[in-house]
Amino acid sequence: MDHYDGSALGYTRGTAFLYKAKPLSMDSQAFAADTHTGLRHHNNEDTCYADPEAGLWLIADGVGGQPDGEVASAIVRDTIAHCIAQNSTLEEAVRSSHEAILNAVAEGKGAAGMGSTVVAALLRRQQLDVCWVGDSRAYLWDRALTLLTADHNRVAELLAQQAIDATAARDHPERNVLTQALGVSPQVDLEPGLYRGELQPGQQLLLCSDGLSDELPDSLIAHLLSQHATPRAQVDALISAALDAGGRDNISAVIVGSSANSDKGHQPHGSARRSASGGKPNDGKFPLRALLFTAALVIAAVLWIT
Image 1: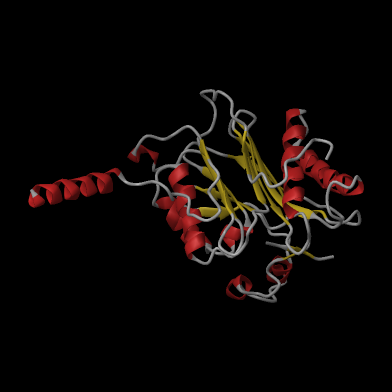
Image 2: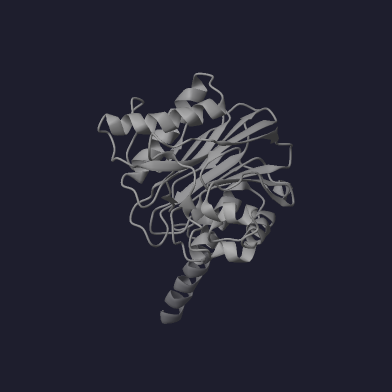
């Protein structure tokens, strides 16, 4: 959960995940998305959005230290989705979400000072646009992990100035102090980050909130991506590892694109779900082997008694 330094569309308070369900075309990308409250919070201020037909995926993370972070992140999600449907550019949509938060506050639909980060991706065929504000991240995975975004926070500034090294940055007391955020104040001089490139077959895009990237070093993220064949399995592994590492914040991840390891098994076209706040992504799944083993023990016990 971050701290900032310095709607007319009808949002839904506390809705942590939205998947726009449509019949998927053959050109739609395989993907998976999930969000988890983490182990130290009672509410989830992250929100995820997935619309594979529009080619839009995003994560917004309500700014901590301010009220109604989940309201702000929901406004960001709904505004960007609406703008993209109206053929706005991704940057225009992100800028509109900033204004939408401020307008909501002015209309009494949220608390003064509420804000959010965002990382959003628009994929049309292989053309990839990424736009972000704050420290939610985008990575490219192609058997190596490449960070596509640059955090808008105090630690990133210190790293750029070579005042600290990467080791010191991970535990720096100002690592969650943002220098850019959506909403918060009309005085914010918004400068969204932009990336344009391509997503080739076999490459994957990972979007995540800082609840994941703060818990897991890039080397571990890369290892987990390499060990699993589908976006669903990769997302589950990343969120489980972040929980095992402490789960100090809300955790969200979206993966777009088929893994180069997908020939290990059938690759589902798309998978999205919201985790229960108290459990890991795979909670509630009882393995078939365990069920058969238990049944065999019961039968053996009955035969022994009789």
